[in-house]
Structure formats: C-alpha cells, structure tokens
Length: 288
Ligand code: SF4
Image 1 (tube, rainbow, N blue to C red):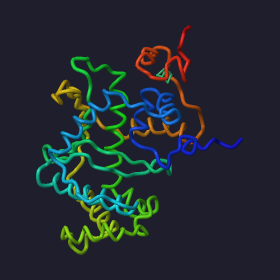
Image 2: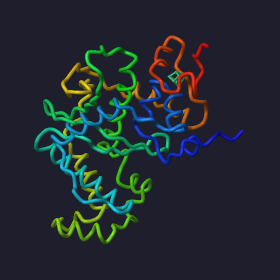
Image 3: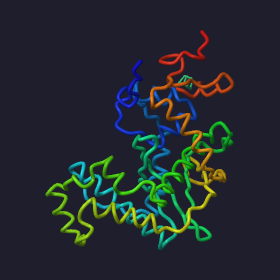
C-alpha cells in the first residue's frame, strides 16, 4: 500500500525544527495545527515580543525588503553572515537561520542564541513562560529535542556533512536571481562585489561555520518570563548524538507516513486541558 504524503497533507514543503520538537509534546496537536489552522493567542504574541527584544540586542538586520524568493534567501544569508561575525567578535549572536537534512527531508529552523564560552560555541534556546510556573520534565522534553537538533544541524555543517551543494540542491540558490529593485538597493547600501549574490553569501556562511571554534556539548535552555523577559530558570542539556538520532528515527516515521500522528499517552492527558482542539477536533481523551 502507498504511504500517505504527509508534507502534502499538511501543505508544507519542508519540516521545521519546531515541528519536530512539537512532536514530543503532542504529535497530533502539531498535525492539527496545520490542518485546522493555528489560532494565535495573546500569550504567543507576548512571547514573540520578548524574542524580538532579545534579537535586537545582537542582530544586524538588512533593511531592504525582499521582493522575490531569491531576495529573501539573500537577506537570510546576509543576516546569517553578520550573525556569525557577531559571534566571532562579540561572542554572541541571535536568531540564526539554520538549514539541514534528515532522511532526505529539508529541515530548517532558527537558533535563538549562540555564545562562545570557554572557547566553545554554546547553543541556547530561549523559551518564554508565565512566571512563576515551575518548569516540569514533560514541558522541557520538546525543548531538549529542539536544542539538540540545532546542535546536530550546526555540527553537520561544521563537519561538512551538509554543504553548500546540499543547500543548493534543496533550495536552488545558484539559480536564484535577485530582483532589479533589490540589486539597486544593495548598490545604494554599498554592498561589496563578492557579496552580491545569494550563492556568494551562502558560501561565506558555510565557510564561517566551518571555521567556528569547537561546538560545546553543553547546551542551555533559558526560561524567561513572558511579560518582563527576566530569567526564570536555566537548564543545562548534555548533547548526545545517539539520543537525538533515536528521537529523529521516531519522529521521521511520522513524516515518512509509516505511522499516524500519535496523541499523548494516558499519563500525559493533562496536556489536553491546554489544547485548543480538546473536545472539538480531538476527542481521544475527552469524556462527556
Ligand atoms: S486534545 Fe490532547 S491528545 Fe488531542 S491533540 Fe490536544 S493534546 Fe493531543
């Protein structure tokens, strides 16, 4: 029997690191979010503001509006290259767009923060929550998967397991031609030759990553107050290749169409009380 095309069913072209992390909260909820549409809540908006405030501390946006796909890819590469320079000089960068591949699927995500500490690059994921709620193990599980996945993806680039050629094959970087309007604005900004195409910039990005200091196996989860941005808790996570690989084997069975999306197990059905689909689109644990 043919396997279902899960990406098509969810209207997606690639998998995000957040999708994979969400599978470790409730996979069915992750799927329903695509099928029934995300309903953005006040809390999510507030969390976004804290992220944006953090981003402004260490981020150099390219102030040109992209017109085409190629412009967007260029802008991302430019901002990533600036972030890597910031990491090398100021020992800190934020909101780094990372690309990779798992089982032949395109995976991308945004690394919240990287720092150089004790000569090594530390990957950090910032999560906002309502203070003073304690951080319990079930809620950290998806965040651990996410931060480990980022560490794996950056490690894949650094070790040349994921190269410019892989990115080009997945995203058509070499073919991507900037719009005339975008090129004019790059001229006006005085962007130098050698940094004027998406290909040139992505090649710089790959070589900058390859020349980063060693990646630390000590990853960090920072929990921040959703309203003030102040820190609630810091959790250290030890990176282990075999653990993230096991989680990815489980996660990819869903994307491969080898199994259906799973609801939470009975002992975690308390999560349903926080789920917008509970008793509506999802009645797995709903008792009349
Ligand atoms: S109601 Fe529960 S099982 Fe169903 S999607 Fe939501 S969290 Fe998952």
